[in-house]
Image (cartoon, rainbow, N blue to C red; front, side, top):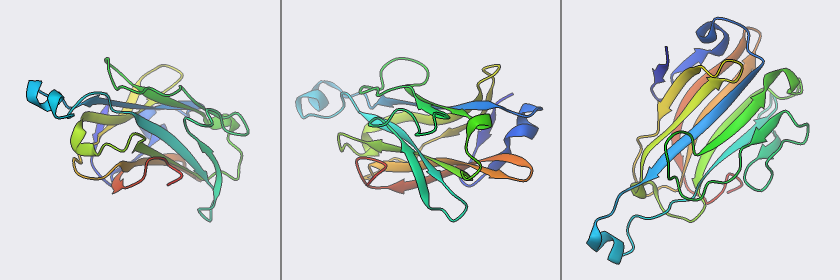
Length: 184
């Protein structure tokens, strides 16, 4: 059974899955707002290039690595990005970040997942955006967070995955930002 998370809500991945996890995937999905005939003439609607990124942090919150459309794999190979989807069209996840938890270096304590509008369109032009965490072993969805924040922002810090003595904790964040990439 999938849990639907609210902003700042956290879950233990192991407790939710009922077992220790060796790998997970974070899926991002979205649709461009459908524009009517006049909206299309005025340049509203159309393709939206949202980009999922994963920032790897140490215990002091210092950046260790960044996985995004310009670097589809972490330096150690434990995290892989599915590649850039420039439209948001179709059903299901538009971009996916796969995390092999068993291969993550011990220095990595936090993974921060962001989404940015590379083309600069704001989130008033996006609908049905979500992120979800999936047990990569059996493909069961563990939790979903709907990114319902519409507005003039061009990015969102979606969620974090943090390691502690009890395992991995997934937290829905939903903090709006500005910038075309996770680097911004």
